[in-house]
Length: 167
Ligand SMILES: CC(C)(COP(=O)(O)OP(=O)(O)OC[C@H]1O[C@@H](n2cnc3c(N)ncnc32)[C@H](O)[C@@H]1OP(=O)(O)O)[C@@H](O)C(=O)NCCC(=O)NCCS
Image (tube, rainbow, N blue to C red; front, side, top):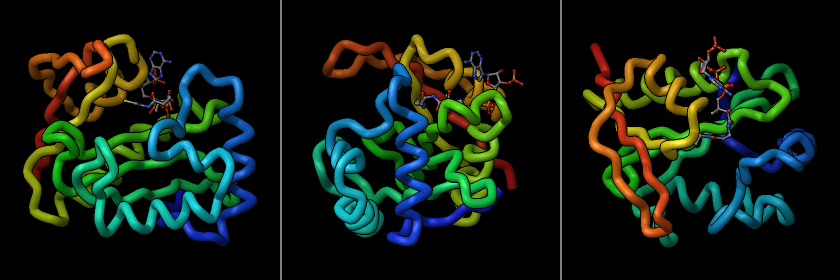
């Protein structure tokens, strides 16, 4: 597995990745990211801007987006916040529907934990919706310790976790 930052050279791989998501119950690009569905160049510009600035509603700290490739196939996407986004999120991930249950989200999480460790962080904060059993299992499999839940403005119950980062 190769981890890289998104660039314009990944246009074909991204189109193939999007095709895989059509019909999945999870929308990988909504809100500020919705542009990804229709305008690849604009999405890459957004990704680059967010890495440096953060700032749109809900994204209050810089966001480093990392893509995981198996050969030429984009299989996973990692959202890495070096400071916890909205105080609760250092790491987010998504795996293309056809590549699930092969440990890719676990590898993405571990990659994120390594990057945080390099920056001297001693813990990672992660959240998932109460009903996202797959994501909760990934977090717990990576050592996540459950904290108190929170409820979003839209009324969703979110599980909150801390993963201690050991030296
Ligand atoms: C959640 C998600 C990232 C998991 O990706 P994945 O690569 O399939 O996860 P892994 O293969 O690393 O799974 C690790 C463990 O989690 C558990 N798990 C994963 N998917 C599961 C599912 N659908 N149901 C129950 N347990 C599941 C299993 O215990 C699994 O280990 P196993 O396959 O050896 O039994 C993927 O389902 C996804 O992209 N979903 C949509 C986006 C999303 O929900 N992102 C997270 C937002 S918080």
